[in-house]
Image 1: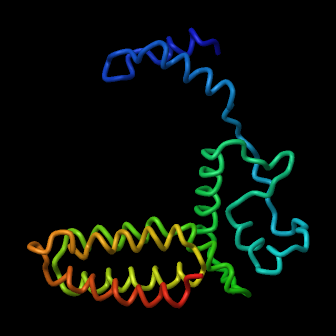
Image 2: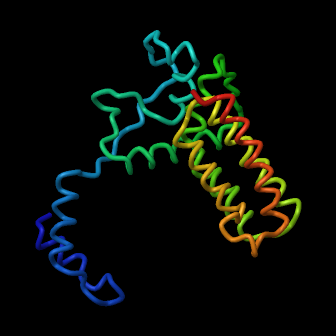
Length: 203
């Protein structure tokens, strides 16, 4: 398809109006450079895997569930391809009746898990704490902050730890003492506990 054909095909897609031609041409060029390719799923559980540190940790088995190994015909060229592939693999695994549990053989795997889920955890603790004054919700969110700061400190994930600490500091309301509520006092207590973690694990 040519650029002009692409522009013709996309007329009137913005609530009956045309998108700017420069935008469509730039989009066409981007798609032309990074073609969307369908690939057969040739992944099999019997694929031979090299003996390395990932294998010793059991990561190769866990990651092979969703991430294709780099090879001539299996390499995903764009992140969208990879995401689609992962979604298909998860759906395929969900349809199968048997479930597999992979036991971690080394605590190092926790570092990778935290690097993947720290941002959703931060949102899960921050949003309810910000929007609710319920004592149970406040307690659960602050416990989450405390444990997240503990784990990120132990794993020396300083950037992640600082993100949790900064967010927790916002909930202390020490910058605005007139507005302090009970949940802010509880946040101050958790902040003080976190200082103890800094003294134990900072280096």
